[in-house]
Length: 306
Image (cartoon, rainbow, N blue to C red; front, side):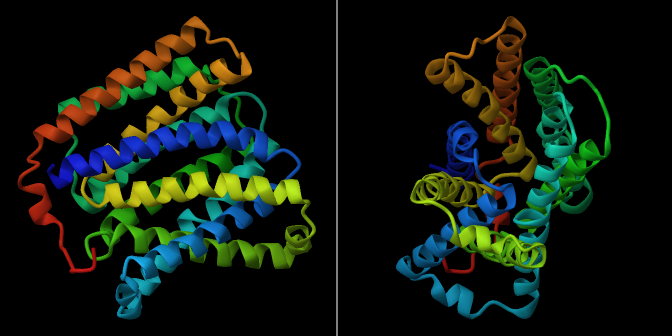
């Protein structure tokens, strides 16, 4: 299997995990303060990733990171693993309706813009068609009411920050392994959220959770671990725009799970949306496979640590 196809399969697995994780989190987050919930999961995942790095014999990669590489990992933690979560959850509290959900699902657009500007990725006709189908699919699935408030601005800012972090991570993955980049995102993200919790007096909530809440933290952390491990190791070998578009499959998966296990009906417009998203992702994957699977790995710099 070529590294390009391996990357696609890993990100497809990430989309599957994302669909399950969103469904599970919808139950687990009840009764939690969102920043406490996010911090607790991040800490567990950061610790597990550290042990994975040790177990795989990759500690030497961390040991010999240059100051510039550490700075990039810290930046990934700031703009990907902490600040956008705080903006996003506060934005959801301040906004009503379906616009916030739609804004978040447009992340692949901002990823594509950043990738074209900073990574020199090309906007091909096939990619454009696939992206249009994804946009239309998300519209039909969500049917945004297009209301706007400060909360929606916070959600938009969070979405753009996540897009920027994806682009930066893709750049950093030229030199580092996906596991180390994932660790940097989760570890430094936890540090920044910890600072927030200290300043807001919410840290005590972490230590006063019930056994049931700790159980939810562990369960949801397992999904988050699978998500970041598979995503960043897959992102290393494919274009960031391709990866972001594939992740759009997470939403239809969550909708199907809600129908199977919670009895939530799937309306016609949602079915249309899921079909359009699936076709869009198929086109984008087909494009990714057509683009030189044989030559792309040669452009990835290996450092001997994977």
